[in-house]
Image (cartoon, rainbow, N blue to C red; front, side, top):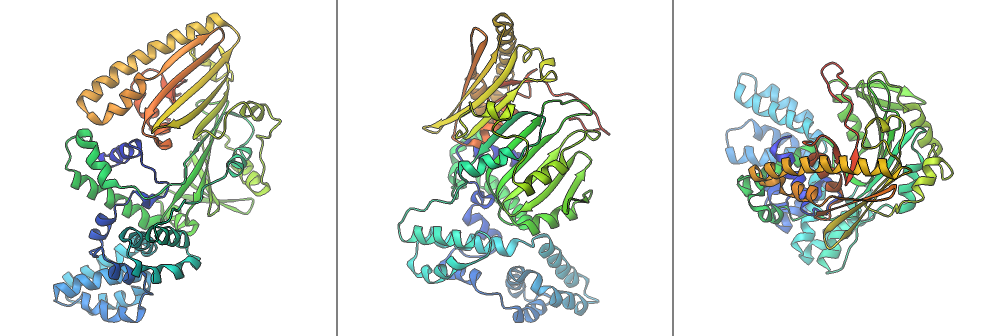
Length: 501
């Protein structure tokens, strides 16, 4: 994991409240990358209809000798995007015999193709920036956008208008009813079902958060960290546009092994299906297959992805030789129902869980799961979480029938936790960024009451995302993997062509 990705995880753990990709893009750093001033007139210019007729003249300026005009032309041509292509291609021909100028044009063509969603992202950033500037003369440009059909634009305009007028604005979220629909789509054979819900978010003050991190960044210059993060996220948004995640639902097979089992992930939110489809097609190893009139992308032999709508994405993974429920999931999405019904065994267990929790899960112990000694005494496990005063609290309840075996499992669990605490404490001393993980692991407590065990844990920073990521990262160094305060069986190692799973 590169330092910028680690930095992103730390920011989320620090309480990042955004659930849009561009919520984590710093306004000033973004416009500095675009060579645009952060002013109301400059933002209005970003929202003006692109003048395709001007592209011919701009392309010719690109192969001129005036550096100021070249720089200005480059910015404007990027804004035009694909509309500028015919004129740029002509400019390449006009620059024959002048390799430096031809290369300059070719480089811009490559940038535009790599940043096809850049113009839509720039518009969203401009709308957001006008709200942050809070100047009333921006209202005339924002109000017409309330009727925009472009993805996210009307909502971003409403948020900025509210900010300028001093009114509260709450981003739309996903209802419990809609979230539970995704649970019902899961296939038969799930031993674990869980869900992560992200509350309606808002733009995050990334610069402030990086400053507050202090030496958590490992001594890296805060300004440099901010620039790296902005560049990384801008590049990602240029490929797929803005992406929103409201909830992620997961189903894990009850029979996991070298050649068996699956995981199903259903992501709900908003995204540009065309942009993501193009990205999947361009993926160097991506293959496609049509199943039940649905296009299925297969980046490798272990994962399949299909895009049923602009608010739902489904991914199915598993060992290469495993039978994966791709066709079942396609049929379930089309029918609006799968195998996890209210009267199914898993459905009945889920009824005992507080599904309003930001993170919740339910697990039925199968014979495969019980191969891990720490899980052997249990029949079911349930996980819930609550956020209070920027602290996320977890509670896992595991039930069995043999109190003596349960007590032995708790003893084994405590041993694993002791090893994990010791290792993470060492890591935190060497790398301050591991301190939140060490604090999380140190908070884990297990208490047995006959054949029932309650495991509790807490994590500072009310980010549901880090409620999933931090335990997974923090417990890698121990012999057992700790997920949100729950012991999980050691992963089965299956070496497929050099890939461990």
